[in-house]
Amino acid sequence: MEGKSSIVLNEMIITCEACGNVKHFKVSSEADCERIFRNFHCENNCGRNLYSFITVGKVKRD
Image (tube, rainbow, N blue to C red; front, side, top):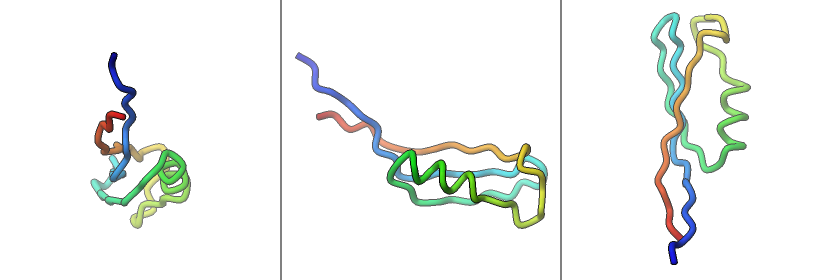
């Protein structure tokens, strides 16, 4: 019987595609990611529609 697995988030990386600004944030949940992305503003005042992000985590098997 296989164990259940989940993903434990560690980091979120936000990139501004307009100017190339990259920021790294420590996270521990999807709620952290949503809050950080919602409140993120590029320091060069680029438009929000030009942001992209990726979350990094590890697979945890129970």
